[in-house]
Image (cartoon, rainbow, N blue to C red; front, side, top):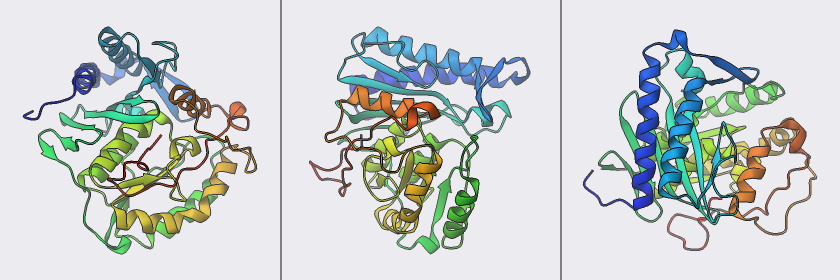
Length: 327
């Protein structure tokens, strides 16, 4: 790696590679793994937990005053009131991993006062390291990333994720997928959202959309996309996608066309997920830690109706000093 990296990004890379080593060793003997369920079709393995532990240990050894939001342990570790919050998915694509399907990744992001500043997504099967620092670009290994230049959705390859949790509105998803499929060159569902977002940043995919994602699924990838010249938001083009549990991303032209197509589905999907369509909107953006916790709590149906959302902030073009906040 020829470029000088931010010290915090270096620590995140060290943590991601350590987790990747655990994952690669476990992939050699999948049959002996202990696997549990967080819900129907939602798996967690001892590998997820071991990878998360080494990531948290590495980060807190270097920055003991930082906060942690991790998929398997929530906010059990780290400082509870820090301006710095590490958002961790130790193994995005667990179902793929458990089947030996080689599409999964480690995702680590650092948010400072609600904005993602550093991001790492590591693909251990290919030894591919995606990383970004706010204002300094996004990279795959030593190569600078840029989103694709395709102008029309009809020429574009689009990534997505299918519903799999109980309570998802499958009929509505089918209508949404049908509309996008009929208007693009191809639709792909690899099964690891963190990698999908990196693939948009790299130009492999021209756009991406999915619902039901948690902060740890999208936080790192969101910085990759904006640093590569792309846009990311919710289905109506606003930047509070982590709270609404819906994401659309792409190069600027394709992003705009996807938003236009997906906007009618936004309220229906939120209702299907258990959110009240007339829930009160918070008057001001909550602090970073509280906001991430609210989004994480939204995983649990009982908490969804009560979870407030921050005021919507219209996303701006990359390069704007005031409007490119993602979180």
